Length: 211
Image (tube, rainbow, N blue to C red; front, side, top):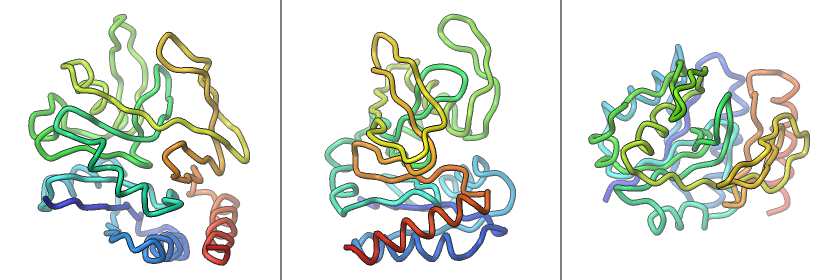
């Protein structure tokens, strides 16, 4: 089985961000492909999926890192042809598995009713139309046909920015700059901003020096 782990690096991003992410993966002995792109994140994901050889994929944002090697080892025990696994996020509706950390199989992708990752308008089960984020429609359209969505929830956030108030399925959670998830991944969020880049650089340097 070919399991590819890939992060997406915009060509205009500060190169120190991708360099430090790669150092974390190397330190944890995890093979990481860093895919440089121009244009949108969603289009970059689809281009990679449609043109590379893989059986199982794990997507990372460039500002998301694993905090130990077990993060990757556990994926093959969790993900199958009926399961999408990822970090919880919200946009304008219910939680979904976001592409800062997102894993699924080639068979699920091939049989998906929706193979696009751009943000777009989407209609939920109640007939309400809302603006969905990158990968949200892909995930939720698969859930509609019976696929399972397994979410890793935020457990702490250094600077909380967004909150989900909870529902019948999910307890309330909040996340923002410097969020740790219960699967032991860390996501900075909004890495396009220079002040967030400095935050990420300092955090990763501390992580590399302490471990």
